[in-house]
Length: 433
Image (cartoon, rainbow, N blue to C red; front, side):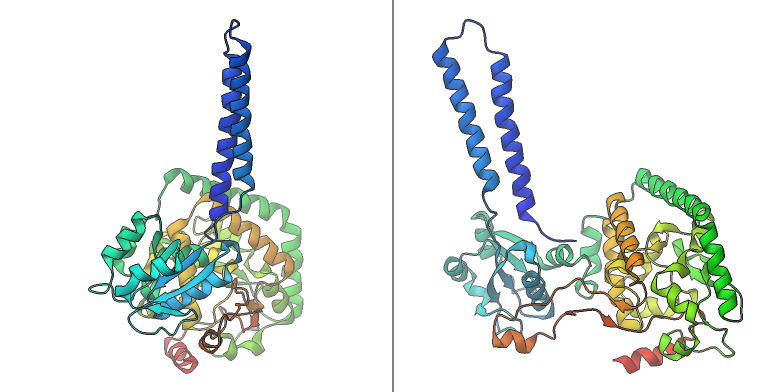
């Protein structure tokens, strides 16, 4: 997914070098004058072959692995260390962490910040990641500048974290940094293409799936009492409310309960479990696409009754309304369903990444992964984690690390068939802490 792949950059460079060599031989070979002496021709051919040999040698040369030093010892620095270790594509060699106090992170402590020059001379890193929580008066600017001049790559921790994980660390992000960051492209052409693709997919999908949708409606009707479709007010672009369509997956409720499934698990029907597992209950939202309320890809729309609580408790939540919501999204394929405020916050990290980096290629990637999830039947069965099991490098690391998800952990899915009760949800979120 979102990784820092230096080997890809080197491959591009080496390929261009090879092309240059071939072009050198071809162009000069075709433009040689007829009266050119044979030794000169042989010399040009030899030079061209030598360039080709060098280019091919570069192409097979392995990329230099990362040797990383992290400045800082707080939670963000520790998370960056863990992500670097678990991203196998980097070939990273952890060097250690530099901070004024011994860090709680998984890497060894190399020394204080004012000793950075000596540390760099000793461990020879080729990357320095700046993850200091408080930089004013602590950041060793002169030593970082000298390292940068010597060819050491110096990067901000938030940028590294974003590329490694495919999400944004909103808890460590200031509004100023978000304003000045690259991204948030609003290309009218891409918007029109995405809209055209969404409408076309909705029309084709409704036509081709009409028999299947009819059979699904019949099964819902035979399985339980109640309507076939369920409608709910959701938040769309610019915070505008719209009626979202879904296949009903629960028995009608006599009284309103909280939104979370632990209070409504007994209401899920037999057919409803199957529909949720394969995301079939979302197919009626193709109608929402034709009505102009949704796109095929975008942040999933939340119930309107959730807006006030989420705006108060989730940083940058209001940015979700700057784009049209989608039937599927980056957060859905990376994380799955959320079941409390903390999990909604985690999904917001992925949503903000999508809003910042959205493109037609990213949309295509999301659609492909969504089809895979539907075919595998993992739509509503668990929270997914992209982080593989990490290798503890020391006893300190093993003691510190709470451990990423080594396998999917089953969790209940959220309930959308009941009205949202702010007081009940707040109680659930507080109890979960």
